[in-house]
Length: 148
Image (cartoon, rainbow, N blue to C red; front, top):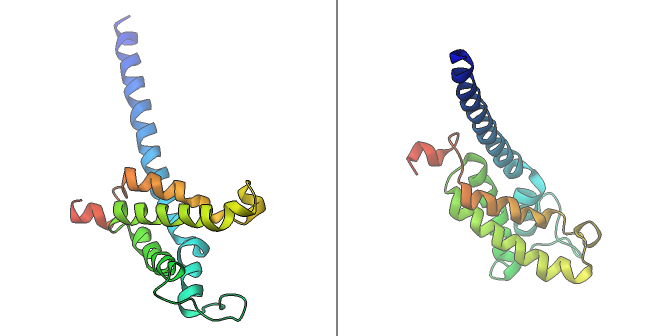
């Protein structure tokens, strides 16, 4: 009888500890995969800024730096690297969430409601960045090494 009374709380503690551990691991994996996924974080920005790996349509050039597309290109090109290593994660993720939400509603949503139909699937990453702006980078990041 006493053994059962002890086993139940221990089992609950171990289950909670395991789920918290797996949740942290999932958040770290999500941050690393989302930030290192080349299209939304780096290649979209380098395409607009440096015409690498290809230029912006229709004539293959770059966008003007002091424009809305230029600001978006700077955010996309450099903030993805910061998120990958977990440096300044909360403010950077908040900026990227806003940038991608604006991109979706300004450029993709007028072409149709569903992201798969209007080309805005990658812009829906704004919800992942919004999560990281609230949750932070986690223990495997430069933010945690800095004590933030």
